[in-house]
Length: 431
Image (tube, rainbow, N blue to C red; front, top):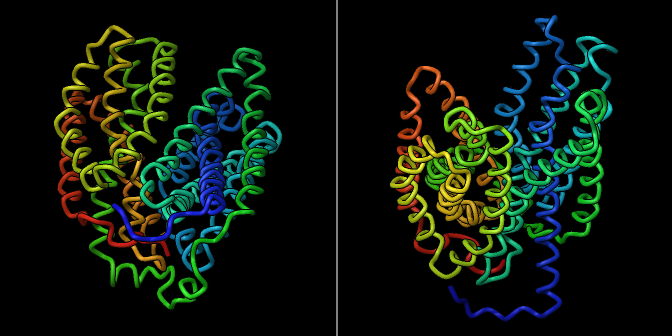
């Protein structure tokens, strides 16, 4: 889409590229810290949740549940409101600072043996902070990156949100793999699991410094608008846009989690591979998936966001069942790698531009709120529950029903993508 606006000066261009780096660095750190918890849990769980104490056990399950689900929509609302009322930069700095605090607390938390039931309780509190932070990070970063991205290359630049999101996940795996080479299992269980949290906290501080030097993208007028960050204004004036975003994010989140986090368990439980082989396949797949994002972002700059979203919905609807059924009986790790990569290539039509497509649907005064809240709600309900639904259906011998559930949600995503305007409603020109 060409506009007759002035070309960028080299200085302006460099500033915008630096802003993309600054915004996405925090995203990388946020997701690194968030995933480190998941990957290291096997080592630190016994230190906080001794099996003899049922209260501690209950806190364990409730904590993981509450942190993942409840806090994201609250984070999406809270940070969206801060970003629209007090600026994107402030919101991004607070969210990365919160993640840093959460990581630091976990890194130095005394164990159950030292402080009893306070240990799992404080772990839960730290995790709630992290859930809140990650819930707020997505909407604000997506909004900021869409606003500073260069005209005509918005798709390409906005795709770095998912490059860093997957990068955070990969780095978390990598740190753990390196620790496993140098430390024995007893050492990892005793103190080694704390190292990744320290790394995460230090990285968050570096990101905070980068974000401090970012330029704010909203004007004073926008921030002082009476509707800025108002949930009432969002539902009063932009309900249709909000529902559309909710509609395709539900399918997008579900298929993303199905082929990323759940896939490792699927390869072990259903395809019967060893945990080591599954980890190896998924690390390779995620690396390739990360590298695909900018190319799909560039494609959206050529063929349009709406077309990319329609391809995503259509291919997801047609290919999910065949891919998952074939994976069920696959014995060759290479074939598994190819099939999952194919699935994630389809998902890339969505993930590379998802933040941008959402940002283009809301005006500046409610943009971060609209993007963040719609994403967090759909993600909490459909993305966060993907594994739970899949494993429950498998336990009652109806595993194939899960494939059809994902397919149905992809059809829903396709239908909602038809509602997308041919051209961005907002963000078409620079502010």
